[in-house]
Amino acid sequence: MQDSQGKVSVVQWPVGEQNSITLPPHPNCTIGGRDIVATFHTHPNTASHYLQEPSETDKRAVQDDLDLKAEFYEGEFVISQAKIYLIAPNGQVNEVGATDDILSEE
Image (cartoon, rainbow, N blue to C red; front, side, top):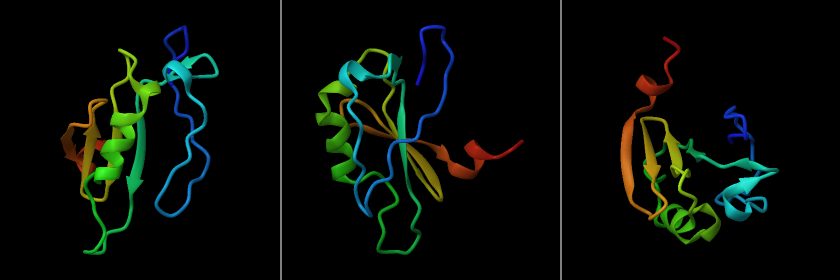
């Protein structure tokens, strides 16, 4: 989130179910007068039958959400144990990099 003064903050969505997230209303890519510049969720399960990269449902959710099309919206980050991905507003996925490298405390 980014306010009118340019201050950036992280706002947690309400807790979702096992395989879904229920988003609060976010008309015109805003919540409470603040711009949504990016969103994220995790893929925390590491067993071989769990998908680490963004699923087709993840891609469609971003692509089909008409309220996440503002010029300033970067997309949805998907954070898995090994890698971080970015789903662009058009549904295209790019690998951002290794999770440990990006989130290290150095």
